[in-house]
Length: 341
Image 1 (cartoon, helix red, strand yellow):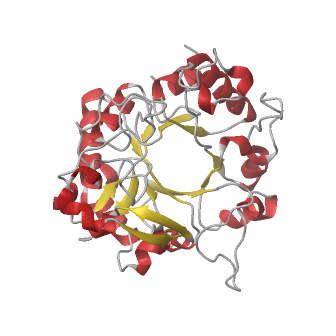
Image 2 (cartoon, helix red, strand yellow):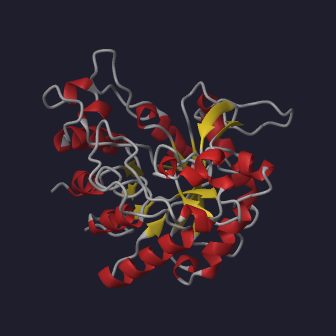
């Protein structure tokens, strides 16, 4: 298996989320066993300020919270990053209350639900402890690539996560030396973090990029306006990112687009432009089911079919384009794409 010295790193997107419910210790352990170089815990905050691993602060679709009558009155509607969302939210629960819940498969229409109800919500501390133990057992370094979710939303609630994250990383001997990359779809919190990483050379910052016509949730120019992700992917925009981050994480289609006929197209100039600016490129997200693949790569007609060959072909098209790493729901397939096995 490749180590972190490999030219291209395999990042376990929410753990081995094609095989286990996402953001559980079981998903992270499976990812490490399957050869991931980094694991990705998305981070949200509890009411008592503990960082937990969930893709969203809304947990109705990924846990069994709806089964608990005592939590029925916690269901509500709120606006997050300009979008109305209804459900149950981590900021309305203490850690002790969240620990009662069990994880569920987020994509039951495509993936097995046989592990539903087995695994609790994990704290960041528990994730770090798992990675440290597995790294020691396997004799190889496994990196951590946490994403701070909805940072402006949590700041407005009085639950900012940036300093909490740095504090927890510093509290563990492993994350004082292991490679750590902190991600965000916003800009202001990465700028804030960049000013606080002096003397912490093991930590880098990754600017996530959404669809070209979308904007970060926080104002990013001096006039309080919004810069679109498409502008951030231009040579000038990439140079601006280098003032606070070292890596970008674009959608994979921004690297290798898909044609109207459902085939992989020619690579864009994004990787070349990013490298010219001094940035690494780690696109997201490669998923193995037919449903997520370009139509010409499908095996059969069932969108649920796990298609390793199609996923490897998609990943390798981006490898040819020169990417430095990538996020995948199935690290074993990603490892095979990189290693050629």
